[in-house]
Image (cartoon, rainbow, N blue to C red; front, side, top):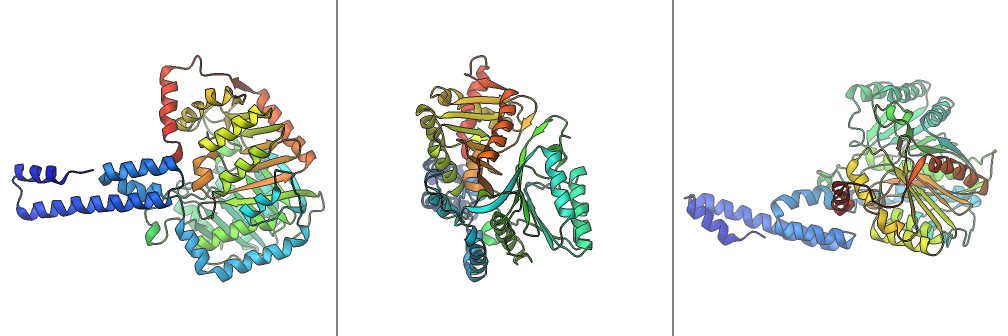
Length: 490
């Protein structure tokens, strides 16, 4: 904390005028007050004890630097989004009630299939539903061929939401598809994250808007309280066509996702194509985001279309910093604790909190086959260093860690026991658990789980197991421990 007497002594030695001294003193006092008020806010609102202690110490000791950083990066609750929900509660609640009414007849009572299933329904305020079909889409070409084929078949509307949209070859394919459908009279929507899509050009947006496509950024910084806010990102990747089919998974819109990155190739990713009543739950996540971003509801329909190709149980879990609970982290904690003989995790960014690490270690100790697959080739070295710092801690408890060798691994996949698979947008890190808007799809189906198992078996076969940190340089080991200190903001 600043010492006022030191400031006064310095001002006297510098022969400053009384007016300047008063102004400087006032500035020092104001900074101190802001630091204390911010520290109080951190105490009352920051979600983790580690984060709270770190912010309070910084805000009291170095308020001149810490105060602006705290109000940009320090908040863990997106109050603007929460307030918007409350201010138009009738509209949002009406849509949510309509969705629940429409899919009620497809609801499935599961009991203890994945722990106690009703816990997850409480987290999401959405049910497990039957009457769905799910297709596993491995890597970019298959994923985007399927997406573009369904967009071309759209009759009423297309709703797209991506963290990254780039004005490159793949981005222009999406743009051309949306423009074509808009000119055919379909309602078309594109929602993007302004930080993730920083390489999107003005011309790209102008082409879409001039053709009648409705486009919006997520606008997380809208509103006086959110003006300098960059911490809450919309990391969802959603495409919904006519309320009939939806796509969710790891792919954004950029050439790297179809294997055209000069260094991170081949790009390993996984997506889902979903048909059935669960599409409406995915569509609801898009509608809530669009309502926040554009201040209006999109023209979509809420009549469920039962799949003719399968009858799989699907559960949709949207999560984000406007939730009452830490939905995403609690979801994965529940999944880990529910595993009886297997939990395999593939994640590009593995920087979880101590609770998740403890749950993984306990699962391994009780005999569960716990495997974690991370990239060998990293796109963000700080995150890779932090991930490697967990190796000896978890492997000593029986957890098996692997590095994917062929290229960059970006898929977000969890396989639990013999029937349960989760594929979505969430990474195993603090950002996905607490700060990002994410969406995860949980499928309960033995045949589908076998498909996921076969896919992951192929991935493990081209990966190397990490037994320890032996052979790694001192700088990598120490760098990993340092990077891990910043896990809450990586």
